[in-house]
Amino acid sequence: MKSGNIVLIGFMGVGKGTIARALAAQSGMFALDCDDMIESYANKKIGQIFKEQGEQGFRKMEAGLAKFLEKSVRCAVISTGGGFYAMKNLNKIGTVVYLKSSFEGIINRLKNSENAEKKFAKRPLLADLQKAAALHAQRDGAYEKKADIVIDVENKSVKKIVKEICSACYGLNLKGKKMSKQKCSGGGKNSEPHGKEGKSDKLKKKEALKQKLHELLEGLEREQIPKRVIAWHFDLYEPYALQLAGSSSFDADDDDWACEDEDEFYPQSSRLQLDFLSELSWRQVLKMLVQALRELREQMPDAKIFKCKHIAVGFVDGDLILI
Image (cartoon, rainbow, N blue to C red; front, side, top):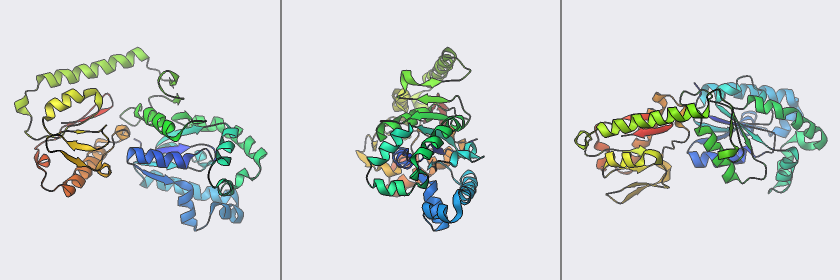
């Protein structure tokens, strides 16, 4: 089972670090930059490492970092160096997302960015653009083979790219296995899943899960629900969650958490984002949930909403339902 990490790969300068930070801000996960971690470990800049130890020395450090990420890092957005895709354990670290762009698009992005000179200096392999272009052409196919998901990022805003990654990662199944590789160039009609299971089969399963939930909820009587409960839900089943929750509910899609009958608001820092929970084990999900509830309790020690006796947890069609 994967670790809940999202690993961004792609050619140098494509924007992996920028996207990782934006994605982390959106998801509540931590953003880790492999180059920054190597610089911290070596106490040297990347350019200096290349100059003193060559590319071979740098790749050796990357291999050590890859082992560390696999064994010790969970629930993070990891931006990698351009050659990190070659690490043997790459797919064990997390869900691999390839940020795809033409070489010209990458160079234009760097030239038009702030501190362009500094960004080129940080990437010694871009000193020879002709050689770098050949390297890009050579690696493109390898990136795609290693990736679980391919996102075309050329001429797109950071916000749009993050949205596509969220949508694509949310489509992975709950056991941490790949459903299919997906090329996402905007979502919807442009998404190209390549799985064995047909669309009609997936729809049938989805409808069956919905029906089971409907039957379950219809069979519940209001008296069986504790007076104060927490419902944590997505839009799809919002009416049912609100019905069962009564006066106390939190909507994971709201910008803030609100307790409807007490007119209290809770800061975003305490939110437990659900978009990336699909690959976590039950133990990890519950551990994160307990931590989030503890944070809220610390902020509101007198809140009655934490006196509920039971919290039922369930995944339905990719949605995390808490009652």
